[in-house]
Every structure is written in structure tokens, then in C-alpha cells.
Image 1 (tube, one colour):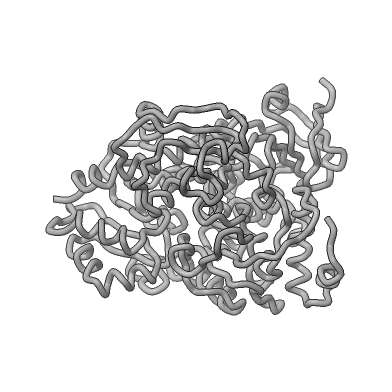
Image 2 (tube, rainbow over the protein chains, first blue to last red):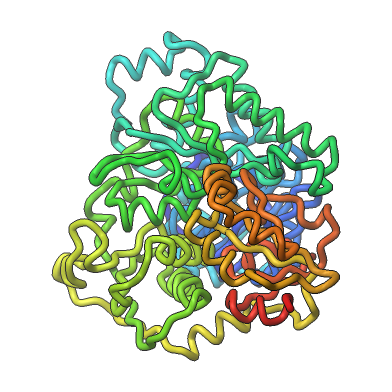
Amino acid sequence: MGPMRGRGLVKGSAEGRALVSKKAFTFAHGVDPQTGSVTDVRSDIRGMNVKGRILFYPFGKGSTTASSWFLETVRLGNHPAGIVTEGVDLSAVIGSTMAQLIYKKSIPVVSGIPRTVYSGIVNGEDVVLDATKGEVRGK
Amino acid sequence: MHLDSSQEKLLHGEGGEAKQFAMEIVTKVGDAVGADSLVPIKSAHVLAHYSSLHDAGVEVLERFADSGGKFAVPTSVDPASIDLQNWKSFGIPEEYAHQQFRLCDAYAKMGGMKCWTCVQYQVCNFPKQGETVAWAESSAVVFANSVLGCRSNKITAGMDLACAVLGLTPKFGMLENENRVAKVSFKLGIRDLDDLDYRSIGFFIGRNAGARVPVLLGLPGSISSDQIKHLGAGAAAAGPVTMIHLPGITPGTSTASDAAAGEELEEIEVTRSGLDDIKSDLNQTSEPPDLVAFGVPHLSAGELGELAKMLEGRKLKAGVKMYAYTSSQAYDMAQRTGIASTIERSGARITHSTDAEISPLRKLGFKTVMTNSAKLAEIVSSEGEIKMRYSSQKDIMAEVTR
């Protein structure tokens, strides 16, 4: 499969194993910052861990506190390596921007890749994300 | 993004460290979302509760406050994670309260209104139609766009402070006319709606609209602003919704066609069975609750009055607590009118300046929480430990009072 193309929202590049959700996702109350584990009972990746992964989900949902939950996972070193979404999730953008400013961590974010497209990626597959080009591809 | 010369100066530190930090945040986010400029805002609403900001959020807020940051526009704040007056009597651990008070102090230092509520539009923050605001709190953003006719994006934690300090926000999303056009229509096929139905309808819309702006048809003309508040909160809890066109209510929207700028829309029917599915999904157990929570978002003084009527002459059964969450302003009103004492005589408590979904319910040992708030049911169950029950206020009263 060729690279999937979207728009790089927070620049940078990252590599990691994919963690793929097909449902609306939130860090707020949905990921335990102490471990990086997904706790949300309505998530299809509940029990999986976001740490070091390239995290795919279609949309954000819920509380505007999601960016601070995200930032707390960064503070504790349990954050994903990169994020890919279908719609723009402002929480991911802001969380990643703050992570850069405060903790000097680069967590690139790409959006505009529909779940019908990224559903070709399976959980655990190695992927490479280049947010500067807006590209995501299998390794 | 294009900056004017005064904004350039702020970015280069000429307005001080706090404004420079704020400019770094808004310009990076603005570039990320494709905004071409920064526009002035009339008010801000920010977050300063420990449960969701965590230690990272304390660092961020203190960084703003300690570097001289002051709010440039009238700024209100979401509830705290503890009842700021009576926290000890609710069993809040000392060290937890300490972190919350650090946030309170930093917020106060920056000159914010000490309202501590998620319904600032019912308490202290009153923008008028057509104004641009930068509000956090997803339920309030839906209300601002759908009822007040304001323009606000769902400004998330960190960005909220940056916008408030600058009095500016990146122009994108719901600030642009073309993004406010409805792209999907929901049609209510049922009547005789109770309190739970309004929340479930919102939740149903949030789940099914995806990133599309919805229009909702068929609401009764008698709908109250409190009912719209809960409907919007349900929608925002379930998905990325930031606006619901309500013909006859939303400024500029008299008909579905106005909402959709004349386009034909996909129509989704809201049926009784659709709402029943939401209800069963948000009900995780049939165990008796150890806590009943009302007021996510905060109850108004009027809603406290309705609750008092339901509790008049009744007592809570043993083994269950009932907390009604509200603003300190509505609580004050309830005390002066005797509503508070009616509620408290039943064994229930009113707690103010905090709210259930951002308080440490798990730390306090609650195992099963019952509510009529779809937002609370969704959020607390997300953490995966407390089991939620979701029922109408009337059904809850029948089960937990005598």
C-alpha cells in the first residue's frame, strides 16, 4: 500500500507500532496518564496502551480538558509517538503544541485521513508518520 | 498565519513573558488549524480544576500567573474539583485540596471572575448575539453557538488561558460562516419528553452527527433554556458537536433551510427505540447506587426549586447519598428562598463551585453512581471503575427516597 496522505497539523516525524481505533476518542477520563492505558469502556481499544504508539482515531469527543489529560501523559512519559485523525481534533493539536513548548517533546499530528482509508492499517503494524509531508505509511 | 505589527511584538516578547508564551501557543495552534489571523474576543471561559488538569495543568497555569499574566477580557472559570467552601465535610483529602487551591490562587492572581461554574452564561458571562468568545467547557460552547448566537470554538485546556491573556483567538472553525452551516438533520419523532429524554436526544445527536453541524427539528415550543443546556451537554459529551441549529431559537435560523443554507440534508429520525438504546448503553449495572448526582452541567436556581418540590416530605433511604451540584450564586439564592433547607431536610446535600465529573468520586470510594446526566454517565464510565446508572429524576426518586 502507498502512503496515505492527509494534512500535517503539528509538524515532525515519528515511527512506532499502530494503535487503531474506529470510534470517537478522548484522553479526558479515557486514558490513565499514570500508565498510558486506555480505560474508556466505549473505546474499541480499551485495555491497550498508547505509550510510544502511532495512535489512529476518527474524531475527538467530549470534554475540553482532553488536552490537559494528554499533557499529563507527556509529563509522565506515557504519551503516544504520533497521532492520526480523520477530523481535526483540537485537543490533540493543543496538547501536542503544549508538549513541545513545555516538555520539549515532539508528537506530530496528521489529520484528514478517513477511517475508511486508515482501516488498512492493523493494530501493532509498524508505521512511519511524516507530518511535515502529511504522510503516513507502513514500514 | 498573518500577524499585525502589535501581535508580532507580543510574539517577540515586548508585551512580557506571559503574553509571549500565549502568542506561541495561539500561533502554533492557529497554523495547525489553518487560521489566517487572530481576532478579538469579548470574553473567555477557562479551566482550573485539578482532576483534569493534573500536575501538568498546575504547571501551565502557574507559569502564566507567575510570569505576570493577566486576563485581557472578562474571564469566567469552570467548576473546581472540590466544594471550595465545604470540601472537608465531603471527605476531600488535604493534599488533593492543596493542589486545587494552587490553581485557585493562580487563577485569582490573573484577575478572573471567581464564579466556578460550567453555566457561566446563567451566572456571570453574558456576551451578546454575534460576538466572538473563546470558551472552554464543551456544553457552554454548544449553548453559546446555538442559543446565544455567539461564535466560539471548543477551546481546550491551555489554549483557553492563552486566548484569555491575549484577548485574541485564531479565526477558524465555528468563527467562519461556512463552518456553521448544518450538514445533517435530526427529526424528533416522539412527544411527551421527560428530563432524561432531552439529555438522551443530545447524546443521540452527538453520536450520529460525527463532525457535521446538526439541525434538530420537532422540539416542543415549550422547551426551556435549562432543557437546551442539558441537551447540548449530552451532544458535546458524545461527539465533536459544537453547535446545534434549533429553528426558532438559534439566531438567524428560522427554518431547517436557513440552517442548511438551502441545501437538502440527510435526515436521521430520533425514535423512542434510539433513545432506549442510549439509555441501556449508559446503564452499566442494576446495583443500588451509593451516590445520586444531579447537576452536570450545574443546576440553575430554578432547577434546584424543582428538585426541592420532588424531595418535599421525603427522606433518602439508608446507604445512599444525594448531591445536587450548582453554582455558588444559585446556592445562595436557594438558601435565601428556603429551597436549600427543603432539599437538605430530605438528607440530600447541595454542593457548589464543583461538579461531579471533575471531582474525585473514585477517591471518595463511590462504586455505583446514579444520575439523569448523560454527560456524567459517559465521562465517569470512561474511567472504567465506577459503574453508572442513568435514569429520569422521577425514577431515581422512586428508587432512593421514601
